[in-house]
Length: 264
Image (cartoon, rainbow, N blue to C red; front, side, top):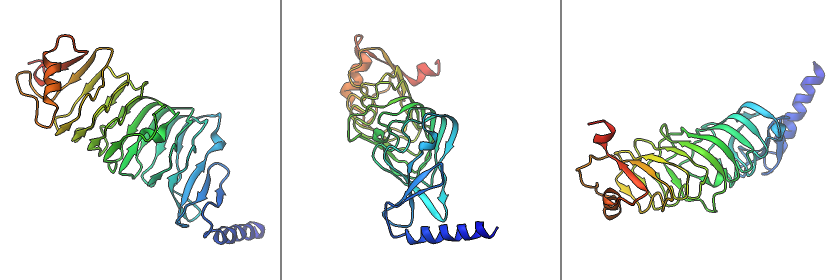
């Protein structure tokens, strides 16, 4: 017992002596952290304990010793195969390509406490469903680099997202399904260009819709629009473009109106 107490005291003294050394590495044998730039928080830097293993669930710890875990470092999840990965609300910062190389994740539940999110952090990640449930995420912004990940479904229905920026999901070529939140207000130009989605339901909360949000698809895409068949295109939408979809028999974008959807 005395040896255990002495060992614990030595570890605490050792950690305390490193508190002013940003970048210092901590590990509990499973998760590896480094001291954040503020000297008062930790960055999850590596989970190599799980590399090349199949894991049912990974939940990021909120503390290590007395320091909060608030960020995820670059490539922290490389070579991990997990059924469910949960990103909790105590995460407030993501470094570039935080989930790059994620070998396979059946579902990623994203509940981090950040305001803007880019697909950049999921570059080279293989994800079945990305469920963005955070009510603090307000905007999906354009990727800084050409997106190269494989996310097949994105569900934003439980999020607080109000804006999807220009090119936000552009070139997410494996993306087959996307569920938008009911409070969404803005969709930018080419937001869903070069994806594999076959249908899209647009909420009635939209006040601004950019140009060619689906790009120039080479296949038929069904779009559920929030107005009735004989109603005019709402203000804030590109009226010429959407009127073209309504009247052109040759368009690869076909519209389903509210009254048709309800079977009226």
